[in-house]
Image 1 (cartoon, rainbow, N blue to C red):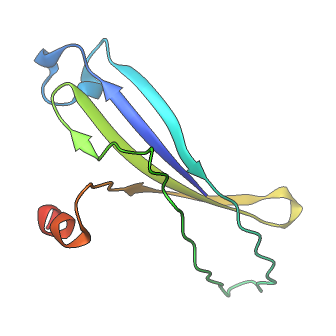
Image 2 (image 1 turned 30 degrees about the vertical axis):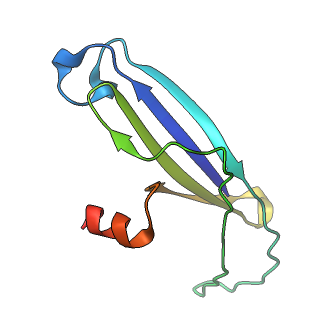
Length: 110
């Protein structure tokens, strides 16, 4: 399981409010935290399994999710499961990082 921070710095503001659309955009990708969890399960075809996953975000990760004219900061969580015969399945989902409490963050997103 990996939490990544993606920062885009846009130089040309004439392309609109999306810094990634700027011709001179610069990208920075950083792994915030990575964690593995060993789960040994036999899952039959057509069935599923679930497990609780959690990730402690270090205090040094201070950037919130931001979309602005010159900078965009986004986060993604990647969960990868390794199956038999060397196969794997990966799910990547966006994550909202907020310096505010859950209640305030939910009001801002709603």
